[in-house]
Image (cartoon, rainbow, N blue to C red; front, side, top):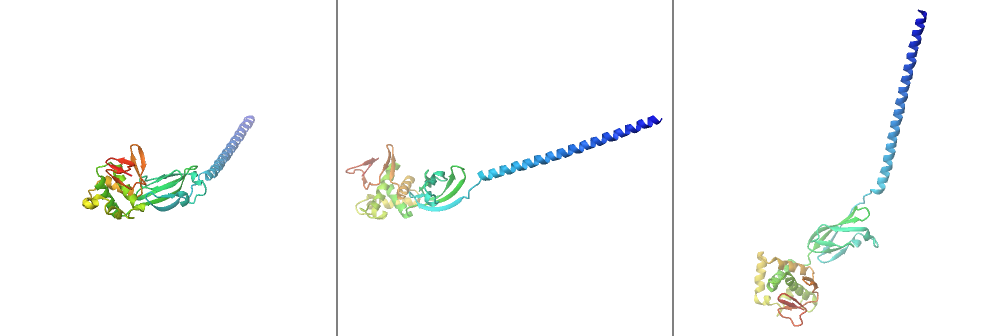
Amino acid sequence: MKHQIIALLIFVFGLCVSSSIMVYADEETSVVTEISTVSAQDSDIENTEVKTVTADKVVKKPTVIKKRTTIKANKKVKLKKLLHLSGKSWKKYSYSINHSKIAKVSKKGIVTGMNAGKAVVTVKSKETHYVCAKVTVTVENRYANSELRLLSSLIYCEARGESYAGQKAVGIVTTNRVSSGLFPNTLSGVVYQSGQYTPARSGALVSALRIYDSGNMKKSCIKAAKETLNGSKTVSLSSGEVNMSGYLFFSGYVNGCRLQIGGHQFK
């Protein structure tokens, strides 16, 4: 009986020791796991900080410069001067425009006015592709409405049956006279100069002016007048572009003719 009691006590003691070892092992495992988790979190934070610093160096958007300028049709403005770009730094940027019928921009950042209206030029860095500047360009016509009315009507009288190139050529000759120094220096002075334009003498021009006022003027005549009044000096023919800057005369027959378009000769 005594031996049985001793054996039972030894068995109970063994169980207690075993349980203590297991509890300690669990606690140790828990601590290790917790430390590992913290280390992993620290590692993530450290990595994130490195990435953030790197990103700050690369991803740094510039402040977009906004400018405005106004030019006349067929006149130019250099963005290099407007944006104060030194030397050849303009080469670092690309240029685009949202309304190519109002103005155009070259690879060198030179803006040319085309027709009345507003357009926006966007300047981007070629290296980062970020927008660096936006320039609002306002293009104004170089003529008064009364001049458009008069020249459109004259072209209608003289060349409404001709091609667009023929109509524009008549407009170019007329505007060339205004600036030549050999004729009156105003459009009305040139058109109504004695002995020059037949429609002004015959009354046909008066009828054409009424057609213009009624809104029934041929659109190509108005377009030709707009382009020439805005300074265009070229006509497009099947043989290519012809610059008519020095032409001062036209008729069905012109002695010393330099150019023929349809039923008109020009020199």
